[in-house]
Image (cartoon, rainbow, N blue to C red; front, side, top):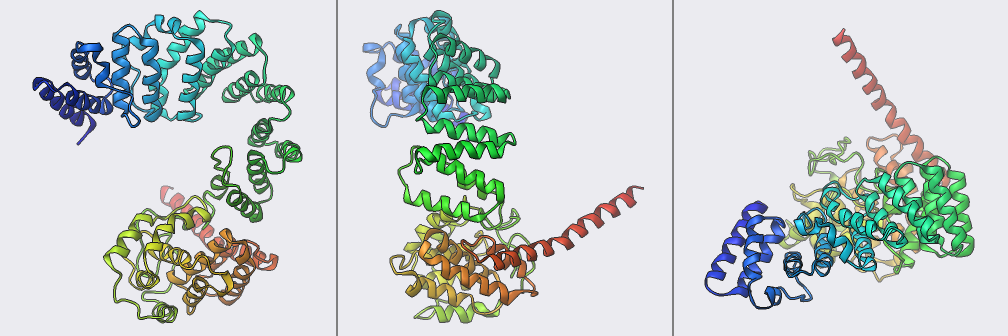
Length: 538
């Protein structure tokens, strides 16, 4: 059912309830209609009828702990109808914060210039900053339209309070998020002149950066540092801006300055590892960042540096060259690398050897259901893949092995997730003597196939999340790499090796050479195809 039909249905139920003199039930259905289509005229017409109830209908839409966005919006509209739009706007903004892409504020009373005059500037600053936090920077395309009414309120308020520095800065923050960069620079500049401060310079620096005026942005951020040399988040912002514009050495200098003041400051640590990985491509930076994240769960805010660095790197963020289908033909991963035809002879014997009891002839329906809940062709980074697979702790190891022996055809990369599931069983056991290590090693027996690749990847993930496993896993992977050199499917192992923490330098060099060699025929094939296409055109 589309949103308009759902809104119409909720509105019909609201009318029926009101006809039965059940205003509370009518209010519930009306809130549902507004949740689907916030500006539906028929819903606002019915809301006007509820406003005739005692107390203006406000008691029908209480501010309960779990009130819906539609309920918030309904109360906001009733407050505006009662002559209190300045009290209603924060509720409407709260609804926009939950669903920024919906047109919550596209109503006449929000656009009334009088609202910007009536609302207290400090309250509007808080409202605007909460909206900015909710939508990100820049805001998604739909939100750039739906948030414009709030920008109009800011315009009217700034016209009434032209020297209010915080209002100018908060208005600038919203303006740049919805693409009004010229206005963002103007307001932030006025705010910094009206009341120079660290925050004013940060707002100005961000506005300049969004407008593509990098030298001015860096100058403003440096002035912010002068206001407060201990705010290391600004150092990280300067470093990120410099790096994004090709000044990596200068960026690293700023990161080092921050780390000299506080080696554990999360923004500086994340930025440092990201930039150093960008500089030399060394996997060790990402592994150390993963260690830091694990050891510092209470960070100041969410960071995406590790995921950003892992993106599009084989195995770090998903299967190499992932194709859209769930699985390829037997013996082939979805990235279409040729592997032995199914069934691979190693799988059945390894499964039996890895289990203390016989492997079921087929996985249970519950095991398949839980596998479907987690399986995917991509993940943010190796620790995230491990965390996603935690649900498979509810699937006994023998059933996970059954999933390997009889993988569901409609599940993405089932072998990968079954092996990751094995990592969660006996996770409290010391690595070298653990059952999870033994099971995965047993799965490596035999030739190259989906199961052995998946088992090797799970071993590598264990090295990412457990420093005590790194030397052992690196040795296993290096040995496997030496075994498969020159054999079909060797590139798969080489790519996995390059994702392995603390892999010895000689093995890493070997893996790099194997991947490069494997790419040459593909490049020649693409060149030949382009040449043939040109001949056909001629």
